Length: 257
Image 1 (cartoon, helix red, strand yellow):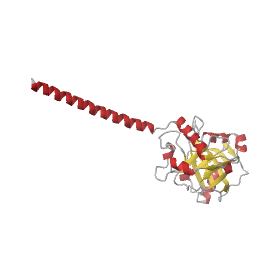
Image 2: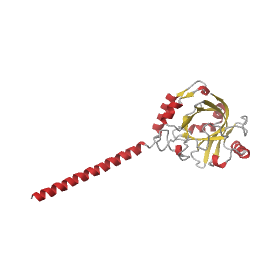
Image 3: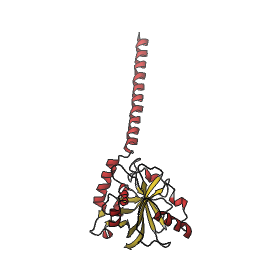
Image 4: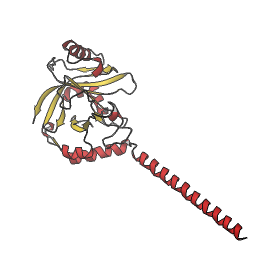
């Protein structure tokens, strides 16, 4: 009888231990799934975060050329932030990021706080200098259904908007760059930085000619753009045309420290 009781006690103890282990595994798995879920971006939450960021790090002036950005505060969030872009009368008012260690498209689907998914970030690739001194710097951003990120680049398809909003601004820690838009056009989905050698005069001119000859979009022929110019190309998608990109192109018009 005593032997039977001992066996029952041992079996019950084993069951309790097994249950506890299973519960521990379940709890661990739950915590891991929770952590992973927290790393998934929510577009609405991300945009709310960007808006709060704008309120705290952007000191706006009546003339955007004189606005200031608190980069120390931004780099406490993510050290890959190195610039800020602002286009008047649009939602484009975001930090620009660049990673020198991650894959080139890392920030296409990674937010400033490291979450994976849309809306990603506004970013450049490591092939471009973070000082905007290259012949052509390409800045990428998503075309979002909610009108955020680079969606408002499509406003430049309207001739009135194109003519009345000739400038946008890129802020760096030590100076502000003012760019004048000369072409906002639909382009094919070629990888621009790989398709052209912008250090070659002929290739650089080929790119300019192709932009200006696009049949869809707007071009200002009065803006002087030469092989000596430094250009920024803002690139986003065109919703119904996955094999095309919408490019807003501008040349450096001035800088202020």
